[in-house]
Image 1 (cartoon, rainbow, N blue to C red):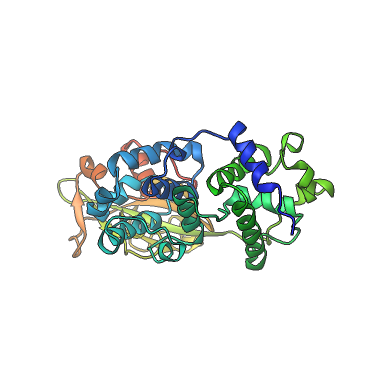
Image 2 (image 1 turned 90 degrees about the vertical axis):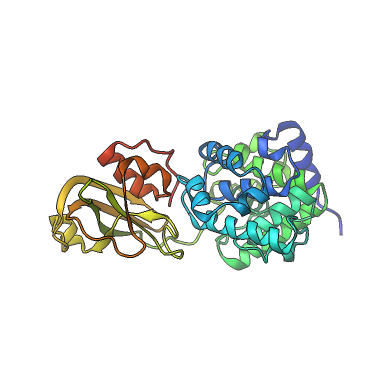
Length: 348
């Protein structure tokens, strides 16, 4: 079978036009791992500062593994999707305990680590160790779908599997590290979602979507389910000296392991009428917080002092910065206390 020219063409283009990003100038699997996890759900421009601060706080695997979960969650504050931080912490400790502080090069071994799925395992394998595998992020998925003229929804497992297998073949025909970086850059600056630069694309002659005049129709995704709205009351509970009651959320679920103020979900009718089943008094703060799959509508109430249940605690306003809170709770503090806020995440 005649080999495809796609891999070499992408590598040649990347050598001339590829983006020069700080975390790409390394073969250190730790730095590559942190960058991949940070930027999975965060735009590069928005996440660079977070990445640099996280690396400054935890410059290597031993530092991350030795830290407490609270320290890691605090360092992650503002990035959202906090399960990523919990998984990083757990995997760092596992790497120190089971692998002597060294990243395994084998894809199957990488997959055994907490929070490392097929995408991240392939990224570490390619960028750190030169494994001949394709790394299929959103940009690469779009480029591959257009190249192959894929009209079926790319979020279907069978379609993604086909595209991954083709990306693997392309990566195996060239330097996989340069190929994968090049495909990501093509999707980011040339083969963009709305205004693709087909005339400057090095793959134009090989693109089936271009030949069929269907570039703007690809990639397709399955219809989205209706977005839900949920309604919550959050409570400012203070002790006699003005301390604020906070509690830690369970490790699993939304905002797992973070601290919060007491809250409860209420009906839409209660929320709209500002009726609080706990008898709280409106604090004049109303906010909206968006998750990937639903919107949270928040009203804030002042509630009477109460004894702190086991595990809960009262803290002063000055100590808010010590604890890791979700962006929604930080927004509440910002509205009530004018606490400086970190840059907002895309979601979470």
